[in-house]
Amino acid sequence: MNINFTARHANITPEIKQYCEKRLKSLEKVLGHKISADIILSVEKYRNKAEINIKIKRSVLNVVEETHDMFNSLGLAFDNVEKRAKKEREKLRERKRRKTRDKDVFSFPVEKEEREKRVIRSQYYSPKPMTLEEAFLQFDLNRKEVFVFRKLGSEKWAVIYRRKDGNYGLVEPE
Image (tube, one colour):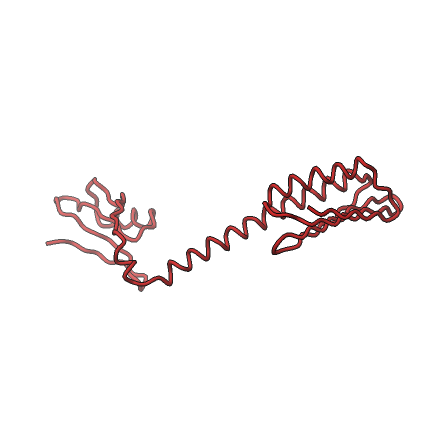
């Protein structure tokens, strides 16, 4: 871990150095990489400004915070850097996952045929007998693609489904 301190119209006290080193060690644990950090502290009238630039393998994190107290500025800056570092880590994970996912898409069709097909049960039916109008109302309320119901007055089952053209289809077995 490389840390470069720069002070503009300010003094770098041992407490500030110790605080920055402690926070950077925790940040290094979060990232899992060696980091190089530039910490620039400046004072302009009543404003204490803390600027942190961290270089990681694939990216650079820059944060600038300004308050009335140097420790508050450093605390806010380190909090923002940690948020960004976690976000960068998630992006890196997602890139890795996307690469493995893309490999599955471009694999040979023979491998896809070897996969076992599963049956997934669903509860898109009504055990109680109902009229065709009630079935259509139930079908629209559930917003499913298929609805199975028993017709009122008989023991026959019927199926309502949504067609690709936006209309409804009805299947009544003989």
